[in-house]
Image 1 (cartoon, rainbow, N blue to C red):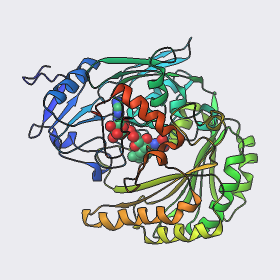
Image 2 (image 1 turned 180 degrees about the vertical axis):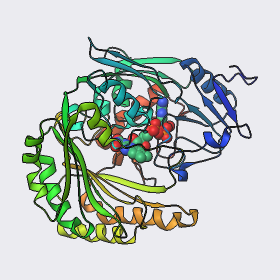
Image 3 (image 1 turned 90 degrees about the vertical axis):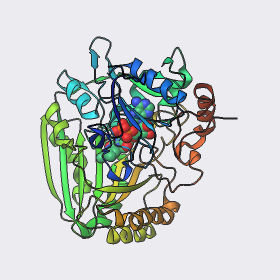
Image 4 (image 1 turned 30 degrees about the vertical axis):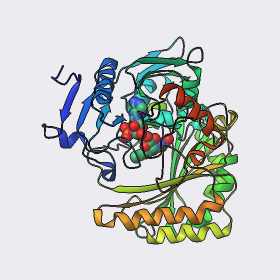
Length: 447
Ligand SMILES: Cc1cc2nc3c(=O)[nH]c(=O)nc-3n(C[C@H](O)[C@H](O)[C@H](O)COP(=O)(O)OP(=O)(O)OC[C@H]3O[C@@H](n4cnc5c(N)ncnc54)[C@H](O)[C@@H]3O)c2cc1C
């Protein structure tokens, strides 16, 4: 498909049929009015789009799974969105234990394809997140204590740079780009078209659990969880969510790569808090992944969100629960607002903070919180609620996760990347010295 502009792939300009569907991201707050969407079918379409954008001086936004959690990341008014979501090939090499996936795949599709062939692909809490974006920022989830972050399994990439050249990076060539891609965040260096991952054999079966508590027990559950979850078996991944006071509850979802009997033994400390309602199942591995990855369609998701995130090196002291409670009391009821925690340790913490661009290796847990709304007129107060809560929680957290960004953070480079920020700027200067790939909190090239 070649249009008269020289753009190739499935090209949709503003006003063309399909424009409104093309512009629908998971979070409506991030929808914009780009000039054109290019749905690339192959790497050359990406290269042509970059060359066209540079010739016509149009800002570029790469896009894969549409799950950006801040504005102007994967769409921008008047820009070109280079969308790789129709590039979805997955090639598993069982003998070498590697998988090459095109960057347009959703995480759930990779998990499912590999699980059916007896292999693990790490995942987070939503199957529709794009591998394109999640990999570059890190990729956290309940398997990480066994597999490491998604980016820890990345061994090679194919990327199109600002001149439209195809660049390949691995341990042997352009290893600085591979280092930067493992946690440096999307939209910084070029448009990735392929990722090569090492993969692990999946167990035949795994134990999954879903536990709920009444909302008013959240403080006791969070306190216990922060002391228990980081130190329990590294085969156990636990996601703890606390919903808004209005209509919310406390819930813990996760998995244990072992038997139900063993899982119950490790879960005992947290199940002894308050009045939990547990569901615990020992399932074939594929079924276990389905239990954890409920469908999360992009086009019908109606809530807008403001997220903020950080890492806990110590359990929250009592005084941290005051801003947490205030946030949960003020968050809109009936929405997916709340707090979310994920336990750290195991394979994530085995790598040194400087080994990959992902810096926050030595934390005990990850924490994020989000306000949500439907009416655009509620946006400002909800954004302020999340950002003010960050200020109040700042003494108890460090850093922030680039995949769950907050554009209220000023001088954000060291906050996302810690001591890796200067090196990331040097890599940026090498691969994109003119800062063609940029967004509101992207990495500027070193001078
Ligand atoms: C419902 C939901 C659940 C989530 N759960 C988790 C989780 O459990 N674990 C976790 O780690 N994260 C999670 N995230 C955060 C997620 O990792 C980030 O939002 C990620 O950036 C999304 O990637 P995407 O490709 O879907 O999004 P997009 O909106 O397509 O892109 C996001 C960013 O990545 C860039 N990008 C995308 N594709 C490419 C590419 N091919 N080349 C270069 N840059 C690219 C974009 O320019 C943009 O800056 C979640 C997000 C949502 C909305």
